[in-house]
Image (cartoon, rainbow, N blue to C red):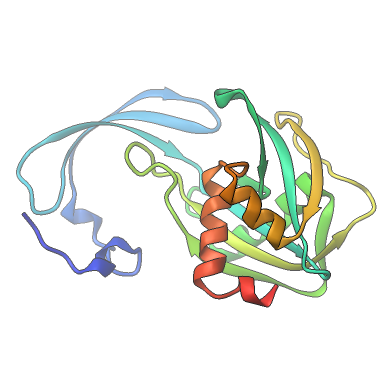
Length: 208
């Protein structure tokens, strides 16, 4: 079995996709949001052929909006697959490229922030990139890119989210309330949990 340094799990060190032998790829289903493939792949350091069903998705952004008063802005959204309304950070897919650069990621983050919450980055505010993560790496390449937007302010025009979304409410919470919502299992989506964890790991929660 191949032994690798722990940093080999990051984009900064695993860059040679030629080490992965893709023997066959067949598209099973496709729409405007995703494509499902049946693949035959030999991972690096192995000889066994793996047959895998893989879901390819557009890249996405997730934003932690923080007001000048130190409150975080969450949306309450209906999630049809699980039949639940969840409190979440605003998020959205990047439509214009499968391999977006940082300029497009930031542009999308600011647009999704305004469309889903009715808030915008205040003049002189910062949009801080906090890296990425994989939501469901066992079957999908979905990759959300994480951002902190501070301070944000209300636009006065309200939200203007896509008609395919079911956002029923937008509200400010203190970080103490957000922490309690996580501890009490109110926050259940991977994006919000991952972004909160990244904020904590980088010591940014102490600055709120």
